Image (cartoon, rainbow, N blue to C red; front, side, top):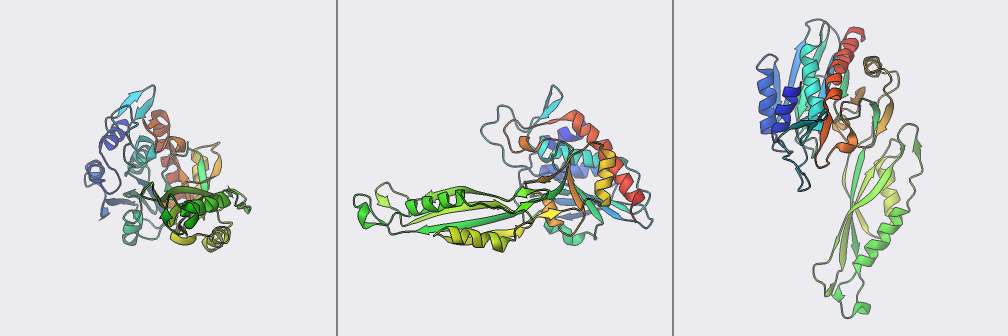
Length: 346
């Protein structure tokens, strides 16, 4: 597992440039299991030849770009004090390596086990959703993301709004003759800061809203007549996207345009067989709702959990790392959960 993880981390694979990681995956598979491919996405299958459920293991090998804040080579994995450092080690190559090892070693006595190594999870469009039409209908899924081996049974959605505040341009020396769009934008941003999304989901709590991008003006001596800002909303199932858009429009004077509302919240019920299998494999695991997006968003009608080694707060940080003992333990946990689900599901 450590050697496999090392090779995956060494393979530079920022989103849309996953080729080196694909080569590692294909070299590891070495033709042992049949492959479905679309773009840089790969799926392999172990079929028992006996009737039974289909279980999906899904993780990704694309990463965010390395930032200038790294103090070590992002693609030269190093092990110190039980941690492997390297870009993607935590998000989510540790999960993928553990799933690959569990896929290879698990007993598949009925039904079938599928493993998908997805591309573009960090940016969307050409990742799992492009591969999905080539795959069968699954009965359950485990999404490999760093959760500290606690189990996410719900995940927030994503709603992105682009807003345009309009004023009237003018000379900076005569501000009284203009209508500064910067001030209009600031009033709107402050209004959104106090917007209370008060509906509480029993597991996920409250939806969140944040203004994440703002821009206006090009020259110091021109009062801008237009300013733009972006709103990132992570809704729970307590709100529909339409309700949230209406709340924002009622609060601001700016024009509000929906950039993306396709990622809806997902949730798996407490009695799901895949959840029971994971809890049996990792006793004492806490269940929680994840505020961060993952490929689980593409599995809306499927009982699924987000579960894996690593820590979410380490994702996308400089000098990213993962605890090797947790990744090694995850191999056994994934294998146990796979065997329990395939053996016990109708």
